Length: 328
Image 1 (tube, one colour):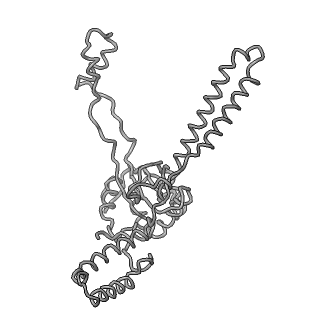
Image 2 (spheres, rainbow, N blue to C red; image 1 turned 180 degrees about the horizontal axis):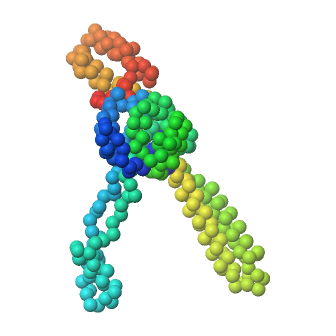
Image 3 (cartoon, rainbow, N blue to C red; image 1 turned 90 degrees about the vertical axis):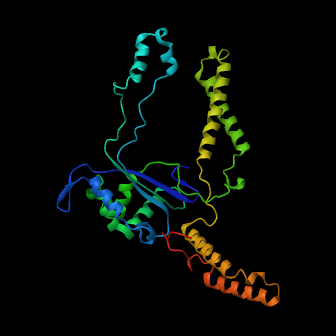
């Protein structure tokens, strides 16, 4: 499903950057230059503005100056090789493509954009999930957000609080089907996928086909054409039934995958903490694990009990890794 899948919301935005001249330390500069400077100075890791809540899985800022130039458009070499066999007007277009002196049209953005994306935990793809996340982000990091988005078009005149910030970002949102995280490591189990009921599909096809056939044959066509248009009415009903099934399957395909087990950010952070702690435990107790006597086994059991009591594997609020922490 676009924008939401597997228990995560994929917020993707393109926000236009101002192009006027602004002041920076007593000198004139461009907003895009000042924005680059601001982004380069943002703290990383545990001090990141996105590490202040437990919903962010991944976030990034990217400045998009313009679209990439992929080079000149190349002609169809087969048509060019035909030479005089083709009309001159038709071939002239391809000859111009071969001439590097003749300029070709290029695509350009109207102005630079700030790309902002964030993958965060959500219960659904509803707009309220996005807005609640953005309001919380403003509540915890409004000073940093102001320092970034002040260089974007319309921010200073529109944004005054968390609600207006959410509306501003929503106006720049793009629909996307490309998340940056996926916790279904082995694929989504078949029993978790949206199921297609053959009975419902057959009933939908038959019902729509009959209604359309009846409308065409008994109502729309005049009496003297009924015999002539019987086949057309039948084909129309079949086509309508097929179209109904087609769109039904498309809508079914838009349903999001379920969230993977233990895939919210607090659960992921707890897993990372346990992995690091248990790795240390295994290294420290590898010699104790080779003992074959009862005392060695009891000692390892007691040590592991202390490990469990200290790390509380079932308590995601207990000892855990901090958001934004890097490393294992």
